[in-house]
Length: 535
Image (cartoon, rainbow, N blue to C red; front, side):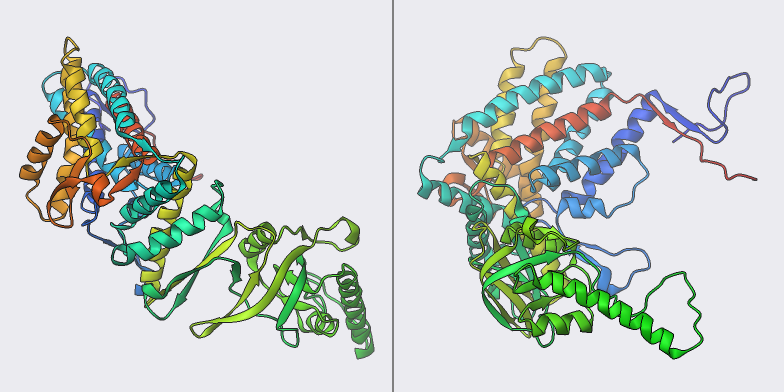
């Protein structure tokens, strides 16, 4: 790929060990690298997409992942090609921004580059192709907005739209067979957020045992996967919660990096007594806050646990940083590290804290918390791989729904959007003189490749279905798409196959921008590896 050697008489301005690819070689290496990444995830697109097994090098079976989530697959692939890294980055951005469409954005960018490669073979300049792609993107954006519907004024219809979006999102995941149940869980959880996109208020607990159908949403409770301290109350009503991140294990001598020499065991006993007195004073300060529940991020040793239990305080240790942060959000309490100013500390509140059993494990349930938006989802499953993939699938649905609550437009799925946008681009290309029209038509072909890939992944006759679908759209039936359940065509709104307008728009814009950026490349410079000193 890179020209490391120089011809006789040529001048190299690059450091020894550096490489360079120019012109057509640079463009081809860029396009080939991007197409290779797109082809990796292409078979995972759509409701009939296949899964991938991801196993780290040298790892055991317990560390492998089984998934068809585009962002998860691409995130696990180590690549050296710079264009491949661009496609991986846009997939990550899609996941961060809207949560779904991570496979679609990568595949669409790959198809646009595939079409652009054919145009460059016909001696079209990349800048002409980029200009045509820009015009095509604007036409596609307008067409996408024209078929979007908004039912935000009608709560009943809007909830139905959210249910359909959630089921469409989950139809390509491991939860597809129970998508109605999980769609209802996701919609109820997101509706409790009341327009917020802060998904930290939704706690997802994974527990082995049972089946996926045993999963449920705890509407009025927040679950913490920890245990209550020994000798402490197991149930507290009208809880006043002190959240802390402080060391509670100094009842033993721990002087790191220091040697203590004594001439008798009495001196050692004095040091230990001083440590205990220090810890007792700390416990007294904690009790002075008026709390009846103490939750610490760090460990709590036997002495402070016993002292707090004697004062009727429920003790929960090692709640981890994520657990403490979520509890602070849910209970509206402050996280403290020192206890000298109890009047300046806001205690968290809960109507009831108790132990509950889920499967064979005990968890702590906080009910009646001030933050009414908080809730917990309990996932049950046969093994870790199923639970992890179920969590990823549900998280995608929650992300899409939270964005749809904010941006309420919805569009038909099943390839209907791509066909409508392609038709609009073809019509707009008729009015464009010159070679840019060829680039616009290529963009339309790239969009039409999406329903073709979906049909191929389902084992259907893709050419026949896409041809019939194209005829439907030219007849004005812009809401028709692929019905993968019976292998035919249907009105997407009638059968409830809907997607978020924001997700589709983000896929279109991100894929187009990535393709345009890679088409502009005419030189790839690889820096020389850094030499170690003394070599």
